[in-house]
Image (cartoon, rainbow, N blue to C red; front, side, top):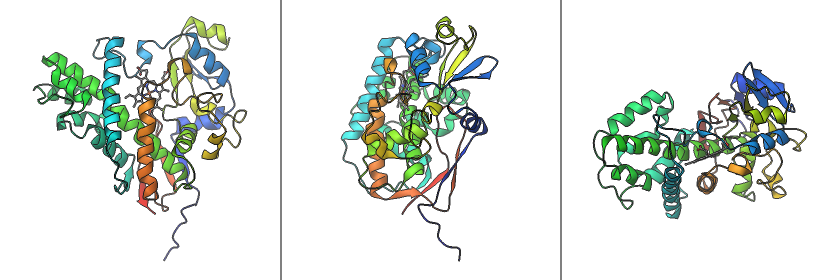
Length: 348
Ligand code: HEM
């Protein structure tokens, strides 16, 4: 019989070739050309200056960019974020069942658990909008939305469904319902996708964890080595060339927390997963560390993401959930969110 592999044996990350090329070719570089129209930026100071030079425009705001040509006013964006924030708080207020079995293929299992925990009361038509399969194509998403919007959603009160769901229930016409369902998808899907990715990454990088290490440190360190939001795009603007002559007037700029988070000039043992380093570091001020964006316009969802991820980690740690030791490599595909995929988690 082959020996049982040790739980502590090294685990490899198999990055998509384009991500691997960035890590292999540009760690420690400040500014470099990615293609004829795009400059990559990994210098902490320059990222700071570019982000501070102007607010993100509509096309650079993924959550609240226009939906089917309809701009999302600030008041609507705030109302949607309030609704999803309340939904997450309501889920967190429920007692946690630490014995929940989350073994299986991650981040899938985590995604479905989060969907059921936060949006479990919603009718199937709405929950289907956070399905992982809708990642494939925006067209498929719109087909599901158009079909789902055909009939009114009944029972639209927050007591019977999520606050996001109630917004769909209140929509008076087909067009408004379709819009509200699009916003449901925009706000509910990231809760499941991003938190599942964050915790899957953390478990791959370090589980089972030393019981003395706080969840927060594990999450900060996971976001350092595998920043779920690993690149930030800003389209060409006159301000950028004034900050660095290597950026041309027509160049888009791709800022890369992926690289600044591993810059050997900023981090001791940058490649090593060491959650303890956060005992002495402040994630809001550590130079070059921006998993939730720049201080001027940080992620609006971070206050819900972190407690939700901590709760998932509580369950995982209670059950000593960890990657199956027979799996020694995890793929990290080229995608908007940086996440290990198809990781077999088992109770150890
Ligand atoms: C691990 C989880 C998450 C990470 C790492 C993350 C990261 C980020 C980053 C880096 C930005 C700044 C983007 C830029 O300046 O270009 C951002 C903005 C934003 N995030 Fe998050 N985010 C997470 C989860 C969420 C969730 C769950 C929501 C909502 C439900 C959310 C809503 C937003 C919004 C509304 C913005 C402002 C820009 C926009 O309209 O998209 N985020 N986030």
